[in-house]
Image (cartoon, rainbow, N blue to C red; front, side):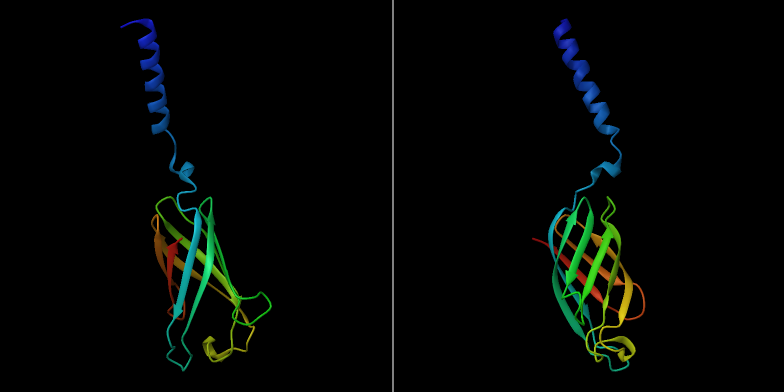
Length: 143
């Protein structure tokens, strides 16, 4: 084998060895893009009305941010969190309640709240569920 071919072979082996050493944390961005979110909370046991929110979200460097409604209005909600390389995520929903018929315990409109969502994503879709109190499900679809 000539010196030139040997040098090329050594370079190729170095590149392959380096690729295998890249940690999973460098896989950031796998889920990046625009997503549509559907949040569905069925009618509650204590007469709480069911509702469905549909809103956009964006994932940048595997960090999700979505927002429904206007910050100063009842029914406003933000959804934020980091996706792990395997697609799992714990998201945090924060907002202010909509009209009292939709709110747990019929809280006054614009009462602040927050809860966690356990979610799982793949390249084009995802699903999640509220982890406390009222049962709510989320569906994520990449645009």
